[in-house]
Image: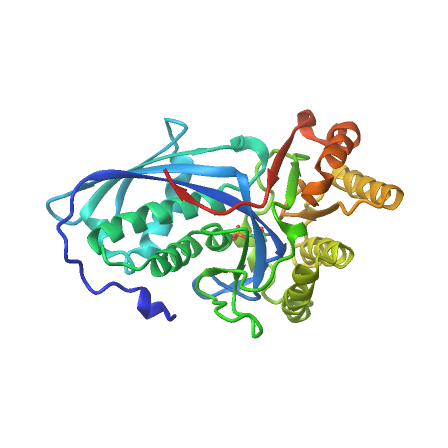
Length: 360
Ligand code: DP6
């Protein structure tokens, strides 16, 4: 599909007031999106597990107005309290999506949002938050265009979510979503996320992700600044090629369930992401000493026990511990006994690969 196909042709039905609620999850990339251009286009394709427990619930209340506003008008609340800290980001989002959802200027919105994970956990809420808001807006648009096909609804929700935050495009469905065009992945698009279309081995079903909260503070580098670091980066082109190759290699891994190959690829992706940050100008180290303690403990445990536990990282110090469901009991005992000491307040969040957003 092209950008133009997301421009609506006028609505048949009269606007009314109402309220819509969506629950949308966070996701964890296995092949990382790092580097963008134009209007939120990724420099390389990425693939992620959609999470199940880490999610945002957003209610969008809407009320039509007599005369359309010059710009979209809204109030925003987090856990029932006014949240002015989100205003700028949401305002930018509305400006970007206006042409794709021209009805939004004819409404007054109130956005009520809450996250299942603590706001201060260091878990980014942009993927779950932006996808939840995009889905709410799409439900209103579907009300105005009742014959909208379900497939189009999902694609456009992902398209809009992407304009809010790139990784949000991968939070509509699950359990594995690809975003960004890849030559060998039919249907993959720069514009929206699509379900991973090939065979997935049983072992990846409800793959576990326990998130170790090493550092709960504000992000040291915003993702927009982070992506910007890939411009003029000495290793950028090699990195983008590597991401494409890794996505291709995952095809065989997902099919056969080769966990040794999975571990090698996923850990390398995580460390490459951080290597990119360490070698950019300006440079950053987003891992903390405890991030490295945890990584070393995971390697030790794997060598001693033959476990298939592995890790991946976001653009921060927290560690996502990945493992098959069959190892849940053992790995959770290992985490509680040996890894939680490296977490702030010993805190970690148990999660697994889920099915995507749901309307409540
Ligand atoms: C390291 O989606 O947060 O988590 O598009 O600027 O909102 P923006 O960036 P964002 O970047 C996520 C980067 C990452 C890797 C990934 O999720 O693929």
